[in-house]
Length: 48
Image (cartoon, rainbow, N blue to C red; front, side, top):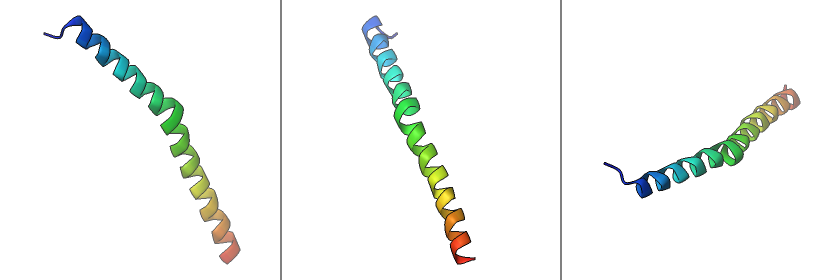
């Protein structure tokens, strides 16, 4: 069985990972995808 201390550290790591993914990684991925799509549209209009 897990000791209570081990469970606490697991929960802290899980919370940290969740916050990292939602606050840092998700916005970066969203901006990258939207920016890339915008660049693609802009370049296609410039060349077309």
